[in-house]
Amino acid sequence: QVQLVESGGGLVQPGGSLRLSCAVSGISFGPYIMGWYRQAPGRQRELVAAVSSITGTNYTDSVKGRFTIYRDGADNTVNLRMNNLKPEDTAVYYCNARHRIVPAYDYWGRGTQVTVSS
Image (tube, rainbow, N blue to C red; front, side):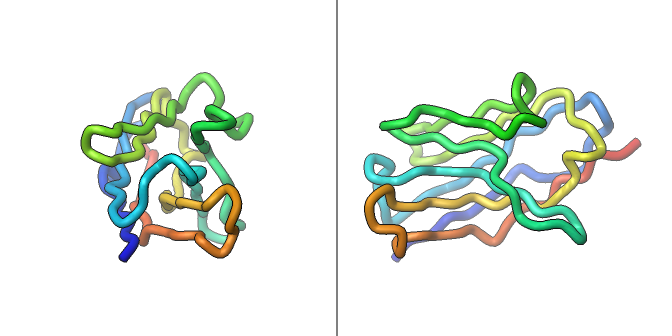
């Protein structure tokens, strides 16, 4: 059984930092693209950052230079380090695992709320 469980969200002031963590069980990282998505109220879910063994990392333009995605094989987590947070980063953040060859193998966590506000 595949499980993705997010943690680390919360309320932070503009300019602050948070680290989101996604605990992954039931799959190994190798064949999967691991990603963080977010969805703000009234908006579509969007890809924030992704990492894979083949393509490395990629980021949406609005977070480049501020966010870092990385995998930790020791504890099977995918983490998103977020610096210099802005109010427009406020959203529910979701962890995703999508198989590179078999798109049906597509798994989501339940999300964690990030609120950037003074």
